[in-house]
Length: 360
Image 1: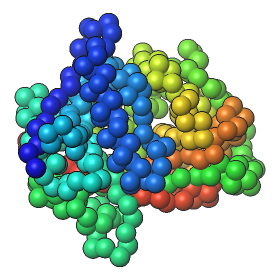
Image 2: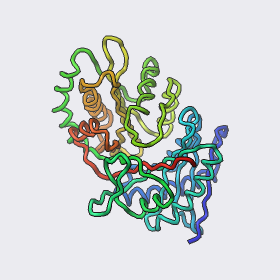
Image 3: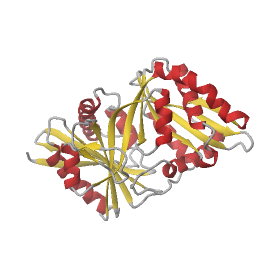
Image 4: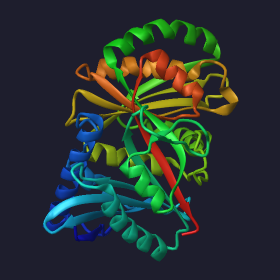
């Protein structure tokens, strides 16, 4: 196997993509689909080349690139690489993919050489890598430094360890069947509302956040970056403001995704103190992605997490009755949020590993 790696970088000033960019991303999207179907059993998480193009061309807050590894004319692997520009400026993030028919070791080694070169060129000192794995309790396991969760010691984990990466965190990928979730939400909501009492009220919307709520939501999203468990992964608070939230939502619209959000407002102060958001891809009407959920630390203990998630599930079903399942990801040490998800009916399907190399 003779592997050559090429990199697609995106010009923020370009008004339109060219044919070469489109062909590159089509090859990458096809690779992702093959890998995701092999790991997850379906293509719910596989984005089209057009969606990837929209997401990667947004370069205001993160510099992004895509790598492809080829053996002759055959695409055997790829990766996306992202470097934050307004915070966490010592860190680069990467998610490699390998064709299921290939041995991961040589493909990952070739990709890693190019990733490290670009990370060093950009002056970054830490690389974080995310990988997805089929659960296999019968296999030897790799345990993160947190001691919570594990990954099977498969060909990918062995290859990453050989490259010097340390497993810092394991996330649980879970799926909710929406019909069962709505039944669970109906059971859970009365107690959640009672615990919240009259001190809090929920607000929900479909699509972009109302203008007068952007700043408050930005403050919560900044906390999400540090309040959610990150294991041993290097993480500083992200810099969010109203314009960054609005830009994120503009990109989602352009990529064909609808955001469905429910927040909890503290009645006495008018502050937003909890939020949850689901993204619905228009090209996959049966699937949705349960993204961030956060309760401000000063307002925990009132079942606001369950309140906003259960309420938002109803809003999702009302807006998109064809949605059958929602995917979500949670750190293994995030016991409280995992308990909420289990109560709503989310069931563990696969695991993801958060790897890190420092001192690059």
